[in-house]
Structure formats: C-alpha cells, structure tokens
Amino acid sequence: MKKFFAALFALQLSWIVFAVAAAQERFTPFPDASSSYWRSKVPRTMRADYIRLGRENVAQPWKRIPDSVFAEFRTTGNRTNYEDKCFAVRRRLSCLVMAEIMEHRGRFMPSIRDGLHYFLCDEPWWGLPAHYPKAQPDTALQVVDLFNAETSSMLAWTVYMLGDEINRTETGLAERVRGEIVRRFIRPTLHERQGWMQNANNWNTWITSNFLECSLLCLDGGTRERGAALRTVESCLRLFLEGYPDDGGCEEGVGYWDRAGASFFESLWMLHAAEPLILPTDRRYILTTAEQKKVAAMGRFITTMHISDLAFVNFSDAQVHNVPNINILFPYGVWLGDNGMKEFAAYIARKYDYFSKPSTLFLQSGNWPTLGRELMLLSMLPQLREAKAEQPSTRDAWLANSQVMVARNADWLVAAKGGTNGESHNHNDIGNFIVYHNSRPVVIDLGRDTYTSQTFGQRRYELMNNRSIYHNVPLVNGVEQHEGSRYKASGASHLTTDTASIFTLDIAQAYPEEAGVESWKRTVGLNHKSDRVEVVEHFRMAASASVKDSVDVAANHKPTDITLMCYGKPMMQQPGCISLADGNVSLVYDAAKLDASWTKVEMNDGIMKTQWKDNVYRLVLRLKHGSDNGTVSYRFEPYS
Image (cartoon, rainbow, N blue to C red; front, side, top):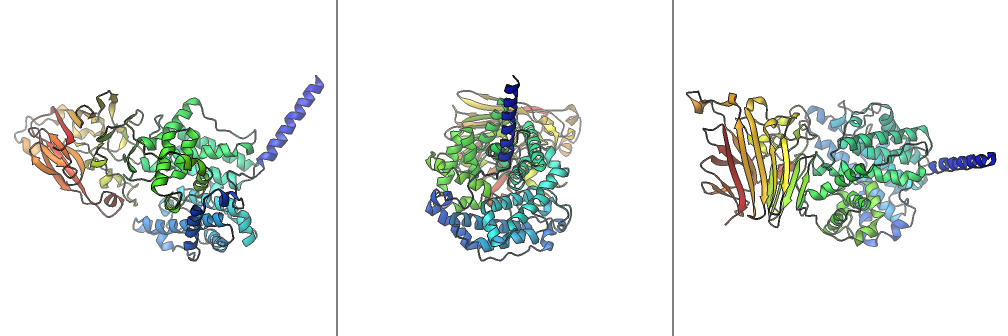
C-alpha cells in the first residue's frame, strides 16, 4: 500500500511540474507572423489588400498630438478633435502591422518601430480626455479607461505577432513595450480601485477582454501577477453576467453589442485558448447551463434586432445603420453553433467583398482596426468562406427582461420597448415604438448623436435625442418622462397568435407626479390578418389633475400630445388620414378626438442628422379638451 501511495504521489508531483512548465509557455492563440499560415492560407488577393494599407501608411510621420487639443474637452466640450487624431494614429499602426504579417519581408518594420516609440514617448497616457481627470495627460497618472485598454491590447498583439522582428530592428524594444503595457494598464487595473469593475455595462466587459489578452500576452505564466489577473477577470465576468438580462438584451443599444455581449464572448474564447497554460491553482471561469443559455441569448441579440440591409432596431444609444464586426460575429456564431449568426457574418462579408478587399471591414472594425479579432477571424477563414450568406429576419421576438418586442410580416416591422429610465445610456423613452414598411422607415427612433461633454453630463436630458418629447411617447399634461430607475413601465406583456403580435404596458410610472397621470396603458400590435400596425392608448388622469371647476378651463389646461417621429414629410389627405413615408403609408386616426400637426426637426450637424438625411418630422396627435379618461387609437396601413 505504501508503494501505491508513493507512486500516486510521484504521479501527482510530475503532473504538477508538467502543469507549471506548461503554464510558463508562451500564450499562442494564433501562429505569429513568422508562420507560413498567413502567406499560405490567406488568399493572395486578401494579402495584397492588407499590404496596400501598409504602403499607404508607411511614409507618414508620427506626430505628437498637441496637449492643447487634449485640453479641448475641458475648455469647449469638444471630444472629436482629439479622438479623430488619436484614432488615426492607432489606425496607422494597425495597418502597418497587418501588412507586415501578410508580407513578412521587413519592409514595414522601420515605421512600426517608430510607431512604437511614438506610443512610448509621445503619449503620456493612452486614453481619451473625456475619461481623464485633468486637462493635460500625466505619465504618472494612469487612469484605466476604454481606450488605454484598447491601445494596450493593440500594442500587445503587435509585440506578440512581431516580437522577434521588432527586437531585430531594435534590441529590447519589444520588452520595453510589454513593460509599459504592464505599468500603464495591467498594474493599475490590478492594484487600484476601478469603478467599472462594479458595473454590468460595456465598460466592464470591454476593458476586461483587453485586460485578459494583455495579461496573457505580457505576464509570465506561473507568476502571482498572472494568477491575480485571472482572478480579476473571473470576478469582472461574473459580475457582468449576473447583471445582464437573461434574454440577452443590450440596454445600451445594438451599437454596443460589439463591446458588451461580444466582448464577454471574446474573453471566453481567449480563456479557452489559454486553458493548457493555466495552473491548477488558478481560477477557472466555468459557465453553468443557465449561464450558457444567457451567453447564447447575448449573441443572438444582434440578429434579433436586425430589420433589413444592416438597418437595426435602434433604441437607446444606437445608430440605425450598423455594420456588425464580422471578426467577432462569426467566431461567436461558431462558438455557439448558431447558423443565423454565421450566415449573417457571411452575408456582411460578401456584401463588402471581404474575400477580395478585407480592408473595408478591417478599417471599420472598431474606433481603429482590432488586431486580435481580425487574427481570430482569419484563423477560421475556411469556415467563413463555406458559410451560407443570409440576412436574419426575426418574425416574432419577446425579450421579457428587457421588455422589448420585435414583430414582422412580409410588409411590416414593428418594435416597442418598456424597461426603465435608469438604463445605461437611457433616453427617457418608456413605451417607445418604431414602424417600418417594406423595409423603409415610417416612425423612427432618432438614436444616438455625436458625443460631446454634454452627452454624459448633468445636462444630458436637454439633448433632443435623449428627451421623451422627441420619442414616440405621450407628453402628458405638458410633462415629459423623467430619468431614473423609479420611472419605469409596469405590466409589460407580449402575446403572439397566428393573426397578431401584441405588446401591452402601462407607462404612467415613467412620468413625475406633476403629470397627473394615474394610468396610461399602451398597446402596440402587428395585425397580420388586416396587414396593419395598430396602437391603442387607454388613459386615466389623477383627480388632482382635473380642472373641471375652473371657469377658464382653456387657460389652465396643458396639452397632452402623442408624438410620432416620422421619416419624411407627412401630408394631410383629409381629417383623420395623413400619408407618411413618401405616400406609401396612411396614418389613420379619430379626428373627433385628436388634432394633428407637424414640424420639421432641426438638428445640429452630427451623426443623427447624417443618418436620417435631415428628413425627420415631429408629428403630434393632440388630445382635444374635455376628458380626463378615455381611449384613443390610430393605425398605420398601406396607402390606397
């Protein structure tokens, strides 16, 4: 028996020694640039396009961005001047790195070396001024934000792919870059209190995915810091997943799916790739069956919200037109075995001619090209080429936790939302809905605009696209909805039958007390049998809101309006019937109960004005005087 236990102990000891040795090996999720894979498996036409990007960037100088531009956020509120310059310099390095990987002849290495020196010497901090406490960057103050995380990741992948080539160009340079990544990003994340670690929003998972990759690429295996980093990753991922709705809905909007649910998946992928290197004593993040279902729902959110031709249901801070990054969409679909996601990625790849000109999608795969994700996709390129290309087309979806409904038939798409006004990137839009006819917008959500200092400041709800008065919800007794989690929908439900998809909720709690509304039940339905979208408003005002005893009712009355944000100029056909969407849709309403009017929405230059082509009108259906309780309805139907 003693011999048996001695042998068993020896076996266990040898396994531990083997595990420690394995953990000290280099993290190799993909072959590095010296591998023939990149020249043999990536088609020549694709390689030539990446190399073209390198040629276009190789002769450009590396110029320091003036501190005065960094300070503009504090002085004028402008974010874009610094961001444009910051993103451009990172775009340049990413293009040079991809070109060198694809050619591997050293032609781009001098410029890559100079670029690395730029990041070491000319940017004291790698993030954005909107996330920094001072007007000037200070090398001693290394705040962890989204973009010093993204920059660290870009540099870590550069050194991983080209480390030997970099050191041949300048001895020790690769180690210097790794050291700065550790100093500026990894150690502040490990040792300083980070507020984003306590939240289940995109900052958490976005930064965590970059932190994991940098830790695996820059910290030695078997060290205390590597172990601490893995524990930090597990803690952040658990908090994010626990705080995310089971239905997978991204409350920040479809534009953030790429850096919310998709970044969570990215961390799972990297942890799986690192599994052979992780010590037995290190923490492993293992999903339960319920968590696996949630991760699958998180992935499918992007296909569920798709309308047509890369237009999306754009509630919250989302643009209506988005191009999901296939370098994370396709791997996510492969991971889940989800054909809809894989086919959507293949559709985008073919639409943008990825297999001949990958630069188009590569250049827009983030604020600057994302190296790690692009390498991930290229490592599974044969699977992408074989995938069927098809747009997703959800007939009926109900995200019960997020309270979002999507329904469609051959002619219509309607989507509506409940939720709270305390969501991340909230827009004070409880009860909002959109309508599309034959894939063309009829009633819209303005979505996001160009970010400024006001966007996430105290005056956020003075911005047009964040106010309920510019969403398809009522203005009750002259009062808009209020921000905060206490202002929310109640009784949200969804019913699907063979003939209809119906969403019902009460939005009264979304309004402050001065609105004087006791109940406002809204029903939004797609009637397949009648081929139209129907909306019913059933309201009851609080007794204190009544002005029945007033001699001058008109003077004391404040309007109650139902707002409809319309794409294209409405045209009155007759009382009770207005044509919308260039005469293709009729809005039919009860003229005895509602007065109709509209005005053109004047927008400042920016994302919102561009995406809607300066062609938005605010149509108001105003309740006529004389009732504190009642029901009004209206519908959208094909114009005839």
